[in-house]
Length: 272
Length: 272
Image 1 (tube, rainbow over the protein chains, first blue to last red):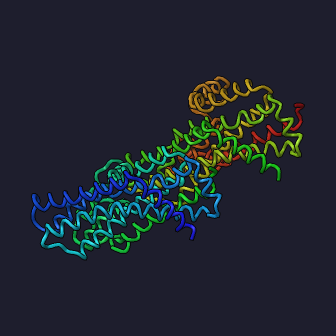
Image 2 (image 1 turned 45 degrees about the vertical axis):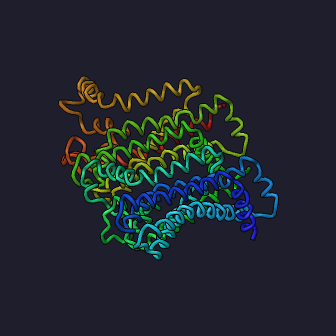
Image 3 (image 1 turned 180 degrees about the horizontal axis):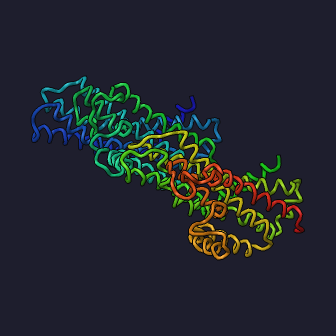
């Protein structure tokens, strides 16, 4: 129960932040405007609009997740309030779970502003508005965002200064969102001694590694369930064993569970 | 089992300081680099190709690091007076020498094992194939060769009184065995010719004496076991058995046991 109390406390503090409310309002208005503009100038159907929206969320949602998550534990540690918190009868697991829940809610709320903003406007703009499709899309986006909240919170537990946490969390963002496929390709190229055969016909482990990021699993799921977005980018999905919805969901869940768990393992025995 | 405590302390002293760790890692790196570069020279490499490919580098690096690991063990403790402390504890001199040899040799064996395993993996993937038995045999021969130089270094350390002399002797051994030995063949023959013991080539017994040097034994074993060579004065069809690869292996084993044992015999009866 005390993790709920910690989450509630975390949210109470967050709710008082004017900047976050301002940010939420800006995001809502921005996405409403984006939707309106897309409807006016890009024209055509709702599916195309979701493609555009996917392109935006792929980059923006993880950024929001990281920005929301990275302070979770380290801020308490650096300000010293964690000693007060731990002097109450909370265990460290409860602290970590509570903080994670609180951050999920904050990130979910920010994303919710964006989704509501674009949903309401597209209801007016697009005659072909597909409500169940949009709800599915929203759930997947939230799921995707949570992976990065969890990642940043994991770093927030494991590392000892906020500078390091920021470096690690944003480094992970850049690596996973922008560079991952290239990194895997370079690794393949090095292992294949710079012969082109490695990239022309990539080995299975390289394809699995490319699939295992939150980004690729997310776009793959969007493509197979809703027919939206670019699909698994940089990957030639054929009959590989990993190409299934369940496995993509599993990958996303693992990204939510593992980083905080690993972070906790190191947090469990740190001194403040 | 006191020697275990001494060995553990040695290993810790080798692994803790960053510079020593980096030095040890360099040994593994030589193997890894060889394993990486080998497939660029042949189309479908096998594990056995690794051994002759690496001989040149190994016969330079392992003597160097083996001697460096061994030559200060006893003499530095003796110079600083720590050996009195060490022996005032319930260790016998035998346990001190044996434990130190095992610790130092074990550290070298560990990095060589890591290097050989990684190198074989790099040879096997993606173009070649892995023969586990061949890899183990190569690892064993190479370990014996490396340990021989740890043993030589330690014996120098027990035979000398000052660190300076040990350094000079180590440098001398390295120079004679690694740099000079291949050049010594012609002078050796000329000297024997002068004495009326040799004609155009060296007689078999002289070849045996000349081939006792660890590097000669090692490269002979590698050529016979892994390159399948049956040529030359040592491995040719009419060479006597005592010039062959098995005897070379036994000589190598003697190089591991004899120097450190002789050093211990001397150390046992010296006044400190």
